[in-house]
Image (cartoon, rainbow, N blue to C red; front, side, top):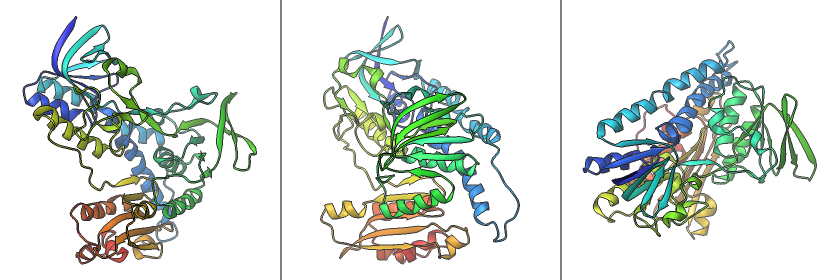
Length: 449
């Protein structure tokens, strides 16, 4: 049986929901498809539940940082209780989303969607013909071509662990590995991170990354760089990770779980996009400035599924907003990416917005750098934080803020002030003249400029 619709939306997260609801409000017949519970990666398997764990780790780390400075007593993370608390955030989401979509008159489908032609999608035995399609299927862990890859624990599974294993080994040193490694170490696990590159977190300022690496090791985390994983093997009750060290030495590291934190890729394989004539590559579906497929004009995409902006939830929501406007009114609104903050929620957080020094130089920009360690500042001292710093890039002549890079307490919040200044073309001198509540972490901005 084939049903006819105006729009089929594949995915139910930040890059999908707004498109479905806006088109339905215009009277379109709309169906949404998801093979997993409704809500998407961020709400169910990513940033939201992760931040629950991070918040607990930050609270514990903050107390420990002030030990001997007026704070006494032993505090610990009760992992099963923390996971139960996390579920109070995630479990209500799928039924809530489905109730909302049902109330709007959106048809909800569960299962794997696959194209059978340029304008036809199948879900199970049912076929759906539509004039338009919007794809926001998110991302999945990148396949790792190593023997024993089936023994890996995904980031999704890490967020569902009922007990914290005593020994954890993380593959990769990106957002996922750093954040989860800090949580696990603060919670009491023995943690190792393996990274094949010479430097982790390549998208962030290397000077601040080096300081975060020092903080990571101070937490007791063993971070091995320039280390290539060769295989994962089960040896009785434990796992053994065989790898080559930076000098070529062969290592065998024992642990209880190996967590995949070595990157994610667009979750597109099951869609059979070739049948629909949709061009895509390793970055996602190739789209024009209107978030429309360059090869099939009936298809739009957003979020991790599209080869567009940064793989961040606010970016996915923006892309979905643009796609919805163009679906409804025809292509008239081109995507424009404003300065977008990015944060690694470690202890303390690492945050950035705008250009790094190397990027600014590649663009031929003339700029001054305001860079300093801030562990001696009162804001860091009263938090007991010994690893904090900032680096601000200011264009010569105009005073325009080209980039801001922060490591330290509340960096994840302070970075938004720089993003706002950059979005509104507020110069460094104008931002410096702002009267902030004092003493606050935000008031440190004045001294950074």
